Length: 395
Ligand SMILES: Nc1nc2c(c(=O)[nH]1)N[C@H]1C(S)=C(S)[C@@H](COP(=O)(O)OP(=O)(O)OC[C@H]3O[C@@H](n4cnc5c(N)ncnc54)[C@H](O)[C@@H]3O)O[C@H]1N2
Ligand code: MOO
Image 1 (cartoon, rainbow, N blue to C red):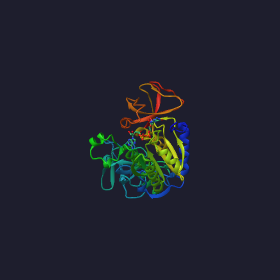
Image 2 (tube, helix red, strand yellow; image 1 turned 90 degrees about the vertical axis):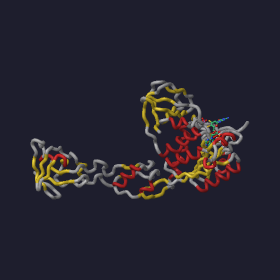
Image 3 (spheres, helix red, strand yellow; image 1 turned 120 degrees about the vertical axis):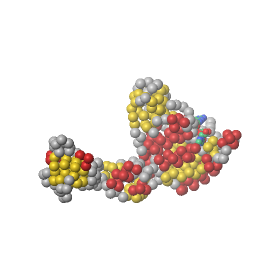
Image 4 (tube, rainbow, N blue to C red; image 1 turned 60 degrees about the horizontal axis):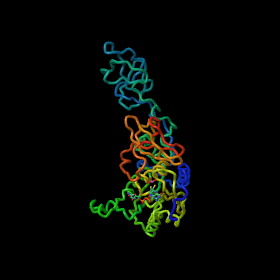
């Protein structure tokens, strides 16, 4: 008998194993970086706001800070008059000129917009009354002291940078994980080597798009990717490529050669250099997923088929770091699935309905670009019927 996938394990079991290894592995992969360098990285800490934001009541409009009760009933036909003072607090019947963002004077609780006022030398005619706190940004209305601004495991976005800098945070602890990417396959050609697509076609070659996709996926997941180019289906060449990549990185992702073909060496190689923990999961696509360790470094063996490798990356790497937003919508048509297997189905959302794209076809890259997200059909579910509400993980 030829090669075989090790006994297939369930998706949940595989995920538990991999996530548990991630937890242990990441404990010492930490770096403190200046705020701007943390963009797109994964936070290693919960960050609480040390202050209220705004830190003081602020005018939200250009105009005059007043005591709202002094303006009640003011209108164009019945303007009220307030004395204009230049002071840090006001008394009854007074107002202070303010600009958007300026601190509110003491005792003032509203701002009348400039457009509804007429300033004379030492008084202001008010043409419109305001409610208490109208046109005022109140202390803590944006963020309360102690609010969590960034969660451990979240990927730092430009908006996190805005909010963290607003409360005075200058540095963040992030995960610092270098990931080497290796693609195997005689049929592959790296994109930079391609001069002529016709020639490629005549030689039955395929462009190594997986390395580029994985590079982008790794980067998007907040880790640091490095591409090692394509390696021929030659056991010794694969072995030395893996050795080099594992020495230079914390993690290695391989793509291709995970199955049971005569030239599928990757699992054998990892088994010789370290140990295989998983080979074969009850998922579709992505069944031949492999996971192992070499000297406490993690190796993810992804399929060569682009969609299978994208799904494996999503389930075992990306989803550890960043949970996707989910939406519940009804299905446009039935989808069948096999008991005992977890299916990951790319879907499109059309008129608030979920249209499954393709269940099979792990080589159909366009099913990824056409999809708005995916649904997961658990192993104990035999499929869903048209009209049933399903949870879509949004891309
Ligand atoms: N007899 C069996 N055959 C297969 C099984 C099985 O259980 N028994 N499993 C199938 C499943 S499921 C998958 S998924 C694939 C996985 O195969 P490999 O990981 O060994 O992938 P390759 O054979 O190396 O490549 C498959 C196909 O994917 C394209 N490819 C490969 N590398 C890249 C790359 N870097 N960039 C873009 N495209 C790539 C290429 O078309 C390859 O021909 O095995 C099934 N077979
Ligand atoms: O499980 Mo494979 O990934 O579909 O072709």
